[in-house]
Length: 138
Image (cartoon, rainbow, N blue to C red; front, top):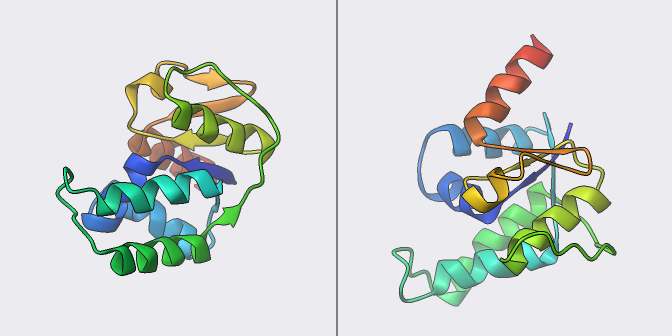
């Protein structure tokens, strides 16, 4: 199953235990195919190093995290231009899902979750996805 994991879910998976980490571990074990565009990796690095965020990693630490994520993900070069969301990063996530043939976008972002479905791509929470995956794989 091909999925896109939004930045907010990745950050939760990196720093805390729980369902986001379970999701990332499934990608690490190749139980699911995690797709991401370079723009999400850039956003991740930026958020990890921003002074107004609690993570406050050095550029080197953030780069190590991003490289680890890059090693788990399939990097998608997008060609679509989607403008359904006010937040440009949300549009980049949707473009990745559409161009990468993803079944789902996994997010905690209410603006994305409100869409529910876009061009055949389900937009759901981590909990919803894990329940769906459990039913599908038995």
